[in-house]
Image 1 (spheres, one colour):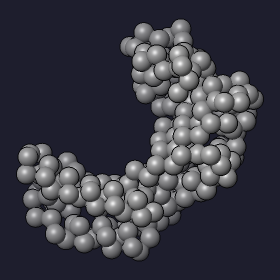
Image 2 (cartoon, helix red, strand yellow):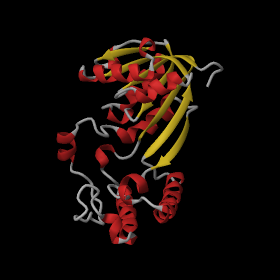
Image 3 (tube, one colour):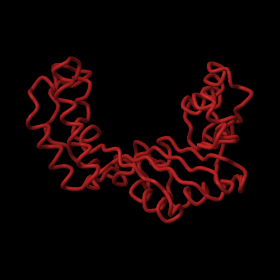
Image 4 (cartoon, helix red, strand yellow):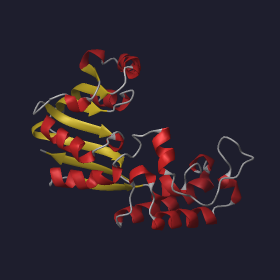
Length: 241
């Protein structure tokens, strides 16, 4: 991070903008341009900005961010679990590169796993093996304790994904390739997910005491090992233009 932080930041698909507001409050970013696709988000973002006391340092844009042309105008492009909702990951990363001034920072913390959650067989097998060794009480449904979760994890159907949210993991398995090609100097840090996101789906809510913490720590160490071997569903990427 440059001395004194970043001047102008840009974030697409910011949701409520909470993380961006925190970066302003912490003195890391001076101002943020926040892009959201739906007008319904405006009031939520404005409320969050008021909560953090940074309303005068946030500009809200409603609409398609890629129709804007912030060429070379920003110091930071920040993607927080929004890049995986883009239909064309390469286009989104290229647009980010174009928006940055020379020396500006691309920062991403996102899901980079299989498009439309079409999990590879190896990850499904790992998830099954983890769930198979869990004592029964870990498999209580978090909202219906009398119902047991399956020890098997499956791929969702494409039709279901499209009906539920056509943007979910729309081109997610192209993200890291796009980042590496457009920002050759990128530092990419795999942050796991085969265990905590897939194997422990709906199970994490049942980890709540010291014994659970010991088991969870062991499982997270396995997740870290898988991530370092290239089997990751999430990643952080940092790169300068």
